[in-house]
Amino acid sequence: MIAVIAEPRDGTVHRGSLEAIAAASQLASRPPIVVLAGTGLEHALSALAQIETGGIFLLEQSIAGHEARAVVTRLTDWIREAGPELVLAAHTYWARDVIPRVAARLRCPLISDCTAIRNGEGRRLFTRPLFRGKLTADVAVEGPWPHLATLQIGAFSSDSVQSSTESAPVTRLLTTRAADDSAGIADPPFQESTPSIDLSRAEKIVAAGRGIQDAKQLELVGRLATAIGAEVAASRPLCDAGWLPLDRQVGSSGQTVAPRLYVALGISGAIQHIVGMKGAKTIVAINKDSQAPIFEIADYAIVGDLNDILPALITALADD
Ligand SMILES: Cc1cc2nc3c(=O)[nH]c(=O)nc-3n(C[C@H](O)[C@H](O)[C@H](O)COP(=O)(O)OP(=O)(O)OC[C@H]3O[C@@H](n4cnc5c(N)ncnc54)[C@H](O)[C@@H]3O)c2cc1C
Image (tube, rainbow, N blue to C red; front, top):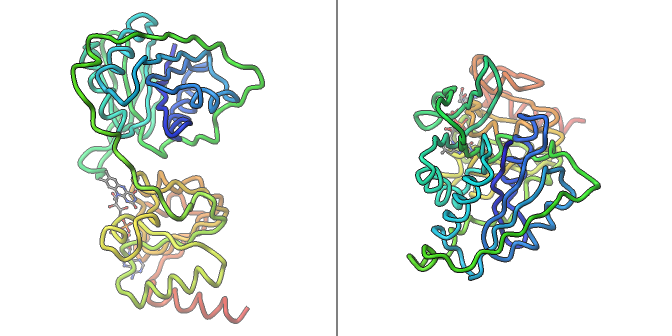
């Protein structure tokens, strides 16, 4: 049995938890068991109502507040009791707080920030980044169950979550105050920034990468986007440099997008960028390096210098 620890968030469940459910469904013939732990779980439960699961467990706390230790105790007890072979969770700030503690208490392996999981060669292989994403490694875990893994946000598509018309059985385990609950007062949950622009709804996106070298070129990016009615987005280095606001960043630590058209300008195609846009229907990539990894997923590859191509493209569109 595979279990997914879903994260209650703002009256619903974190998007990454749906991605974890999709990942679990692909790995096993039976739908996963979903576990929700914390307080105020009823709203989060309703967000799972239309999703195919093998059952939902609510580990409710009798006191309010995010108390990592209390959640850890309940999850650890539940995993010991239920005995899943694999436990998945999205690699969120909440999970980074909770899941390693659960793994330590269970004395079981945890593979964090996975970008893929596959069954093969008689064992399960977990793909995860190394050296700040420069390399990826396939990790095989030895030793008894359970194995725990967190999944990089955007690495799996929540679109492939199976919907269901029948409600899965829900088991409510209301726990009273445990000894651990009072062992620490937790800070408020880490607030991830709320994007003011929702790129996930954009039909067309023109995204700029480090191949864009100055403000003049950035202006051309904007003109190209206007010409085709697209939103402007960027890879992380451009947002880090302050060239575009952070809410325009696409990738594992930015937004996940799935437009009809994604035009990647001077973007190399690092995994952290790819996971945020690989769901685009048509990808056009322009890069002067014919070996750039972005071309592996591009539908249309234009090898050349943006200094030449960008003005020519804008002129051609204006002439249309
Ligand atoms: C924990 C973590 C999270 C991350 N999250 C994200 C994320 O959310 N989003 C993200 O994008 N990155 C993220 N990154 C960074 C990621 O690893 C890459 O460093 C980044 O995506 C590279 O951006 P880039 O492709 O614009 O730049 P580069 O990798 O430097 O690529 C620039 C490309 O432009 C091309 N080029 C240069 N000049 C020209 C020209 N004149 N004409 C045409 N082509 C040209 C080059 O050939 C090159 O391929 C993250 C990294 C880490 C460690």
